[in-house]
Length: 166
Image 1 (cartoon, rainbow, N blue to C red):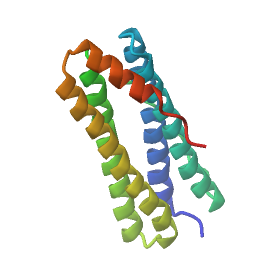
Image 2: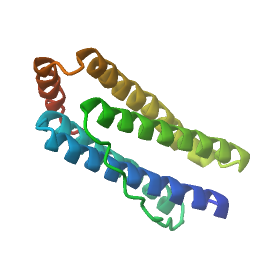
Image 3: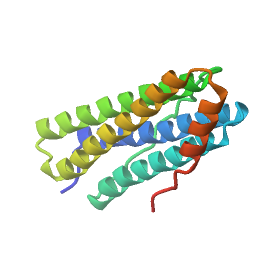
């Protein structure tokens, strides 16, 4: 069953937001590279790739149902400024924005009686809980570390050990 016009538009908006998230994570990776924290920068680049994968899941769902989603204008992210915690605060803020958008899309699917979208959206709701929890934990640890050089380097090494999921 094809997505109705309202759902197709909402899916297109979500796809755009996921791609915007990918670009935001790339900008954060640049900031962390600039701070000489290659492990954290790598973590952000992997996160960027994951956001593109999320966009692809929404695209695949819509196209499998006979729709043709449209990618909207992607807003360039702003540089978070100096400070590692600021980069992860920006990441958390973006994850919270995406989470709310997916919750709104879920509510819309219910209102539009689009039960075929609910399994995909349920998966994304669970994914966002995990995403927010991960970034919140990293941010909390960074706040504990503060400006402690050895602590930041240890955290950089730990986050740099993250491998992309296949």
